[in-house]
Amino acid sequence: MLVSAWAACILGCIGVFVPVLPTTPLLLLATFLFAKSSPRCHAWIVSTRVYRTYVAAFKEAGGIPIGTKARILAVSFTVMGLSAWFVQNPIVWFVLGTVSVFLLYLMLVRIPTISPERVQLVRRAKEEG
Image (cartoon, rainbow, N blue to C red):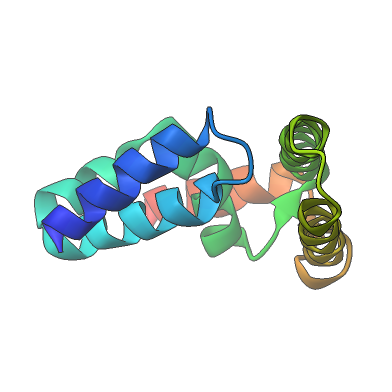
């Protein structure tokens, strides 16, 4: 699993510079494989700022604050827009459009919006008890 995790991680990092290579799914797969392959890797992943900001808030409080959702959408649409501009291909545009619609569905309908105060309250309660 560790070899597969590194392969997914390397491909995901290459995807940052190569339009249309699926960066996010590869890096999520790498994270999952790292976490499952080693308790030390899992401990490191859950201690990172990115994990605490984006994943832990959702897991602990059951939703994502509106500011975090806006950041996720802004970064995602910027990267997808650049990919669409660099790769002038209708099939790629269709795929990116479909991913955009699905991302909007997730952020606006499926994933609950919560207040940042709720996240802090849940985290404080978890630390105390």
